[in-house]
Image 1 (cartoon, rainbow, N blue to C red):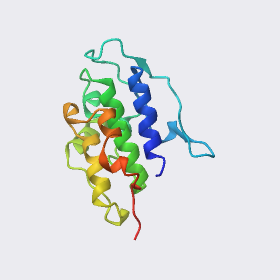
Image 2 (cartoon, rainbow, N blue to C red):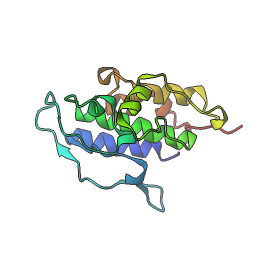
Image 3 (cartoon, helix red, strand yellow):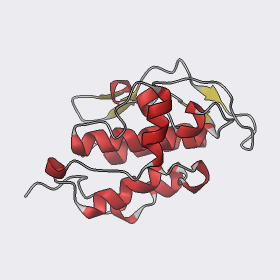
Length: 164
């Protein structure tokens, strides 16, 4: 979980270069022996020519895919990456998926509901406050990666999960 700032930094770098990944998931985040984050599998990556341009390609892994993509709506690809980051962080602190469903219609229904944490996960409120905006159903209310990078909680270097 100490890799969270590096992961955010890597995604921030991509977005500053106008590159969107669109398939961020746990399996595509690697750690070196020095705990450096490496992002892999750029098969669905795209260079954004116009920041106001919306994508229409259905891509990525369903469990990490935001609601607007599942519903087949045009979407902001950078907000796609933000949603996926939220799912990854949720998995890092709980060990489980926030929306564990393979049927896309049911998955979308689950995504509409409030985010629920397992009772035994021990996720502290500051971590929940940090992750919650990333998984906002409405993409326009999700933060940018720059806003995530500047979040005070992340800046303080706290771990995402505190075990008592």
